[in-house]
Length: 531
Image (tube, rainbow, N blue to C red; front, side):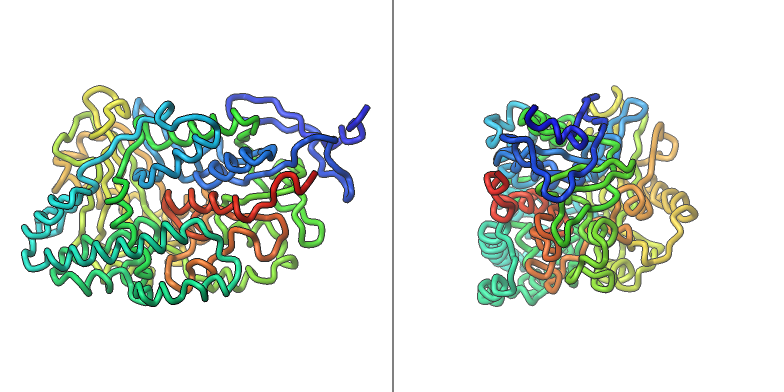
C-alpha cells in the first residue's frame, strides 16, 4: 500500500479538547519522504499569540500545522486562570491594532466580530500621580488637549507637536517596516536616512522632553516603552509610535477576557485541519547538518517537519533547543551579553465587593520615575518603592467575577533574575507592601475584602514560560537590539527554522508579535517547494 513504509513514523493523533496524544512518532531517516500528495508539515513551538498567528498563516498557505504547547492550555503569556468563580487573564490586557486579528479571521473566511466582542475602552488609562493629581489618557484629541492644558497650559502646543512626531514615526516604523523582515545589514542601511530624520538616536523620554516641559506630562507621554519591556530613558524613540498607534485604532478589551482571542485562534487552526497540542513540551530541535528536520518532545517522542517555527523565547530557543555546535551567530556568549527587558511581579486577586470608581486601566505612579527605572534596568535591585499598573476588567465585563465582586490584577515592573532576588522569600512581603499601598489609596479596605489570589514572579517567567533570565518581554528594545540586530524571523543559523514573538523583529506587544507572524509570509517557503 502506498505510504505503508512510513507507518513506523507516521503521526497518529487523538484529540481531547486541545490536548493531543502522540503515538509512534519517530522522525524518518534521511531521504525518507512524505506520503504522496500529503501537504508539508509545519511545527509551531508555543501557543502564544505569535505562535497561533503563525499557525493560521501557515495553514492558509497549505501546510499541515501542529502547535506544541508545554502548558496544559494554550495562550503562553496569555494563559487564563479560573478560580473561585473569578477569571484572570495572565498577561496581555490591552488590544490595539485589531485589524491584525481581523486579517487572521479573514484568512479563514470568517469575521472576527462573529467570534469576538472587542469593546473600546475609555479612558485608555487613568494616570494617578503620587501627589494625588490625575490624568485621563484617551484617544479623543480635544479631551487630551484639555487634560494637558489643565496640568500645564504652556505645553499644549508642545503636546500637539509630539503627537505629529509620533504619527511620522508610526508611518515609517509601523506601517512601512513593522511587517518587513530585516535579514541583511543592507536592509538597515536602506532605512537609516528615515531613522536619522526621525531622530531614532533619541530615547523616548528624550523625544518627549524635546516638546514637553512639565515633568508630570513627560512621564505620561513617555511610559509606553514599559508596555513592551523597555526603559523610556534608553528605548529608541521609534517606540514613541505607540502613542499615535493607540489614537489611530484605540484601546480595546475582549469580552470574556483576552484569552477569548486565544481560543478563537485555536478554533481557526482546527478549522484549517491543524492541531493545537498541550502538555507537549519540546526538548530539542532535530537537525540534519544545519537543517531542521523535526523536534523531540520532553516525553521522548519525535515529530518530523519540513518547517519549524519557534514562538518560544528567542534566547531560550537557541540556548536550549539548538545544539551549540550548530550556532554561529546566536552563541551562548552572545545570548549572555545581550540586554534583556525587566520582569514583572503580578498579583491576581478577587474581592467580595466592587470598586466602581476604579477605571479599567490605572497607572499608579510612585514618587520616583527615572531613579526607579534605573534601579530596575541598570542597578537591578528590588527597590523599596514601586509604580503599578492596576487592571480591573470587571469595569467592562462583569462576567469575570461572581455577582457583586471585582476581579483585578496589579503589576509592578521589577528587575529580571540577574538581580539575584530570591522570589520564594521576597514574593509575599512584596505582595503585602502592595496590598497596604492599595488599601491606603485606590482600594480602601482591600486586605479585608480579598476572597481569592495568586502570584506570578520573575521566577515563574523563567520556569513556567521559558523566558531567559525571567525577562517578561525578551530582549530590551534599545536601538542596538532592534530590527536587524534582533534575532531574525528566519534563523541565521538553522535552515527552515523561523522565529516569531517578542524576542524577534519587530518586538513585544500584541501588534509586534502578530506582525512577526505576518513576516513569515515573506520568508517561509511556499508549501509547493516541498512537493
